[in-house]
Image (cartoon, rainbow, N blue to C red; front, side):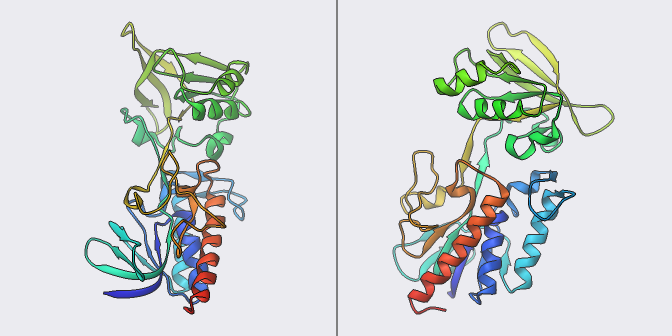
Length: 311
């Protein structure tokens, strides 16, 4: 069984940044990229809000640069994912499906996954008019008509934020009643740029004939069954996120939604285990905040290892 000072579970801005800082601190980190190497930014086209790229950068390109930078300083970046963990003994024991490895410290950077509709055309048009993050992509939809699909607080918040850019926002919900809190719903109802379409589901996201770009939504009324087509410039799926924390159930403290609960800095309830990025962040979910917490986790891990006489 191979032994390591630090293992990072997950990639994306949090994991790669943690690997960069840990490698520069001579911790020889091992990073497992996970099921989606590079994280959610690999399904994003233009990223215009990451510092240092005044002309913007393509999401997958940004992740490749982060990965290459971490590798340059000696991070051992491995494909595949950790399937199970044992934090009950030290060193910790992790299983990648092919072998078990030991780690003196662990950084969890497994991220969160946006819940999607699963409707026809959604995957094909993700990043091409379809998005799951208004704060990431709203600026691409200035002075146009966009739709938000969902009925909870996330949908109301996304819709309200989008009105800063779009000239019209239609919130589409499959029921008559909304799950959103009263204050969030009223805020959306009071916004003159927002209209509501209830008892309606999206059956298909349609692209333009001449290119890969969202052109319309095929809708169906859940009561009458009537089918309609709504021309649209953008569609934001806002039905929530699911943190990728399944393998940590009963091992690390989580809140009711499954996000890891942190103590001081990036520390989890298990000494020597740290967390960074969206796996512990249900509020901001930005590349730059994920990268920042990746840096913090690496520094926290370095200091903790040093306190244990491991450097």
